[in-house]
Length: 313
Image 1 (tube, rainbow, N blue to C red):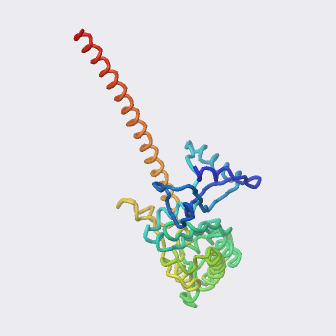
Image 2 (cartoon, rainbow, N blue to C red):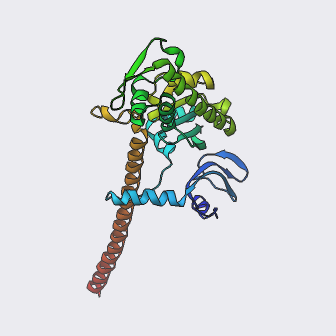
């Protein structure tokens, strides 16, 4: 009930509460309680991490899903879904930063002691790197995207000076040669900016010294070569790439890429919701059966007593 009450908080116009995430409960001044269920006390308090979003953005998502012939059950923050598919329970317990480098945004979620402690959305991601390549190399956007994916690197020092890529010229124009090292310089400059923003969020969270498991990178931007080395160098924390394959079967190799981390996480959240609904229905059915059984048993007993008394008379 206390969590549900948080959803009733008055928000700024145009905003709504998406998630209410309990940080800790306090029962009669006893702090640090993860779950107060089963405890007895007089006063219950709690600290929450509340995530809000724009109403119009949420409505647009609902419309998009509905037009596809589907129904929206729940709205999930992107890094929470990604965390579901790429992070282990041990990492969440030890303390970990999930960095989901998507196309338009870079999402940050910090877990510690098994609880999400901090979330942030940085308003630029891998798409802006493509735009930088397009402008820096004066090529078309689709060519910039292909260059980034095939030859891009987040560390310029890892590329040879004389390595070049030839891009077909526009109609009637000569092909263009692009230095792979210069390409890496463009990518590295923007990636450093993104990492600086991520590191600012880590420091701002207050958990910088408590993140034993380091940083996990996922999303399309995590597929850039040498990106984990750059993050590890700049943040000074152990870094790995998060693949959503921990919960997938053997025949699911095509969706084990970090690109699908959020999608896999959403499916897992959906299955979790479905299981909860089934359990609720099972409990209701069981309860109703017990109730019916009790009523008929009582009725049968009364009937038997009635006939027994009649025979005795």
